[in-house]
Image (cartoon, rainbow, N blue to C red):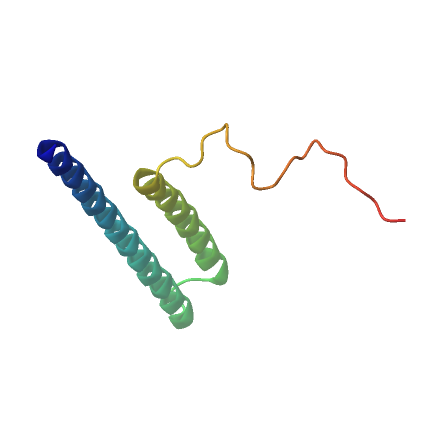
Length: 100
């Protein structure tokens, strides 16, 4: 019995450490994203970038950041709820009521 409880504690501790490391990576990603946005804003202010160049760079940065964040969240938290679970949005096949 003691051996089983030690394994359970060890597994729980390992999961906690893995979760903390993943959240640290998310914070690091957020910080680098904010730094890059500030750099683009400064370049726009001093005239190194045009508004069009700035917008395209920010759009690309947002896309890359969103994809990387989603990837990290899937690694940390898993892929989400199983398909058998009820939807949060409710049953979309049910007819809706109309007020008269």
